[in-house]
Image 1 (tube, rainbow, N blue to C red):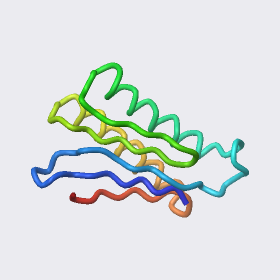
Image 2: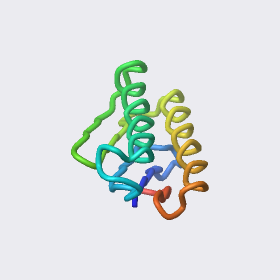
Image 3: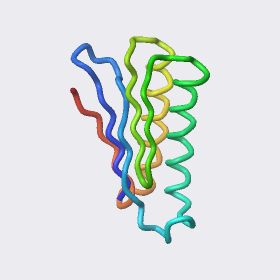
Image 4: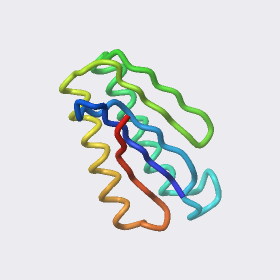
Length: 105
């Protein structure tokens, strides 16, 4: 299962995400849901770090990605909220393969 955990700070602001796992719908490299989630996560991380230029840390390894936003930019909140919505809507279609949670840190 793909697990997408989003983090909110004590002020209620989104501060990043950690996405890990495999949907198990097909073999690695042929899994459409994994490719979909990876693409959305990379788009988000690249938009935050490269387009907006926010103070953020992004890491990607085999099967997981982490983004930590270190400042309170409205643009980052909007982009992260968009990813949450995107993945939550997808989770409705694939509840056995994708789990989205939001946790306070």
